[in-house]
Image 1 (cartoon, rainbow, N blue to C red):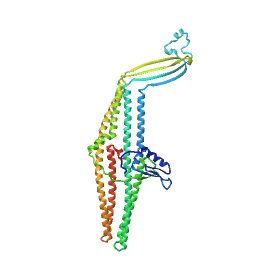
Image 2 (tube, rainbow, N blue to C red):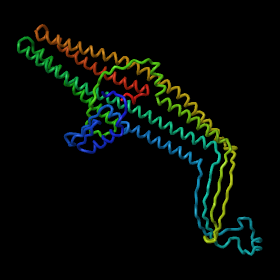
Image 3 (spheres, helix red, strand yellow):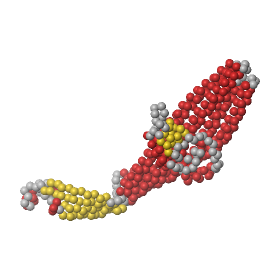
Image 4 (cartoon, rainbow, N blue to C red):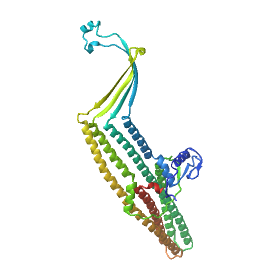
Length: 461
């Protein structure tokens, strides 16, 4: 049964799919992936269950992969913010030949003459310097809050990635169900054709026996051609559904996908809206992600406002300097810098106002996200209840349609009526088949939507 609990074989499915596309014949038990011999006439075949499709999409889907990169970028940003709090050490080695204009330092020519110098510009001399420097922020509340905000940004990116993964699981699940519906539609149209061919034969037999007319035969042949036309439409929809599923899975479009699951009815235990809402508030990651966005906005505001607070830093260097490398002597410097922000032209206050507005925006979004979760849960419950009833009604309708067809065929075979009753019953059977397929599709889709609304999509597959 494809609707089962637990998520397994996550990386295995993706690896098998990729190797399947690149190889000729490959089979691995327990995964359900078979590669046929590739040729121009026979494209590679991929047998895929719903569970396998979900696991493949988690690793291959573009949106999931992009969100993973966002996590890496957010982590790098957090590391950058942390680096501003750690010691910054650098070093350099320099050697230069230079001259100096002593007059530029306030020494007039008459004073230079007293020192025995005939001109203001010195003779060339060399300076060699090898030095290491250290800068350490001892206290900066703004940098500390900035680092905390960056760490919160990593949490937000991780939760957003998980939300996207769940959305992809639900989307692929729905696409798989749609593909199953398309398969069932093709089967139904083929069954309509088989039935129409039987009725054409019956009409011809009755005409040969002198009971029916040529109009009865023609009427059934028209029905047969109508069903053949509907089969072509259903086959086109089937291929379109396959392409949409392949696109979501991120595999090669040349692969011929064979679905191994079927549309089935699995009774669900009834739950009240209150129970489901309680579960959703605990499990929906959108709520947790929005809470972290509010936290991120608050920390960003604190970081900007903390720029008003004085900061303290340590700076020092140690090295060797001299006119010649062999004559260089060790020198050092060390000092504390106490910085007091006074006025920056109003830039800081503008950034504070901007960040405070972001905090208010995130609070507004929190209410919107909560209402959206509430709406999705209630809609999912309504759809689940309605689709469950639709399945029962559709099954009863199909049963009655076949009974109507049997009575009409018997009356026509006995020569009691024309085959108008038969064609009407035939149409009723086709409509009942469609109703059953649509009801099963809606039921299985509502299961996926309800699990997504509750935040428990992983437990469904």
